[in-house]
Image (cartoon, rainbow, N blue to C red; front, side, top):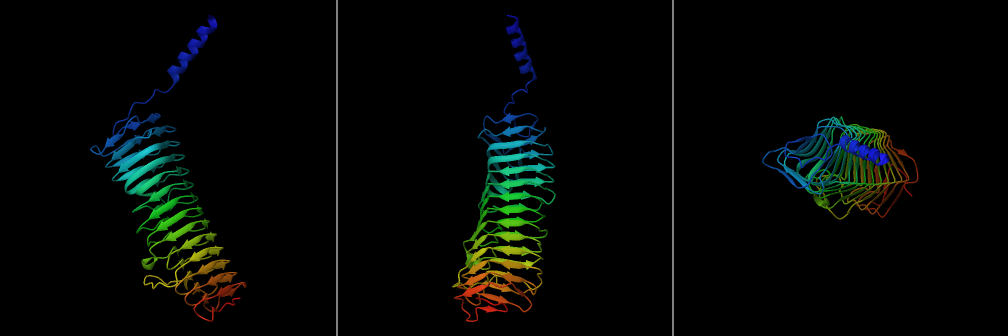
Length: 359
């Protein structure tokens, strides 16, 4: 009897100490405990959805949706928060983290205009397995150490933009129209195993910063007669591009500016029979102001002009293959470094290669 009494008292104390179950929130509410939606939350008249007000809590949408004219979910700086499992429709912002660390955003369907998930001054967060339609993922330049993984971003304004550093961008699918599919700045980011598709826009743009690893990505442009470069490197340096496949773009990889970039074992596929007006129709093009570029064991085939066009002295070419291009397999200026092992065949110009020896 005494033992039963002790057990009963302990159980009662446990119930008293437990956090109470939260009720269905209202629009504009600040939540400070674990919260699960029990119905859709329509905030179109109020303008704002839910604001996080405590660290370490979970907002579980419970398979329901939040719709709003303002920001659907806002975290103004609380750590280790999870937002998951439902849908968001918005006109201004979907989910915004500001000064927040260790958050997880996962399994959310986000539909709206422009910014679906935004990180400002927010480090070490995980954006995983979300679906965004007509809305982008934006990680600003003061947000470092984040993970953007296994998201599907599609339709107009479907973009992933990462300007911070030490971020892993892995196994995402981006299918967009007129917008650049992925833009990367900052330093020491990893872009791995992503699939990027665009009608005619640049698939991957690297601006200032650098020291990134870009590896094992599939990039495809499907309206190439009006297209922009598949990959554009504009002022980014010290990057390694390895084992990527670029197809359909009139200009496969364009190194416009930057220094000390390496390209190894990439494959670029073009279409030789099209006439292009926007870009030079080469597989690889390295502009004259670029320094320290390495092209090694790459393949360029089927472009309207040259497979590889190098305008920058000091570029090293080693073990590349260029076939079935409209003009030369490899056109290089004097002063490039011929590392040997380059091959060219079945290109339109009988010389096959200029200023490097091709087998």
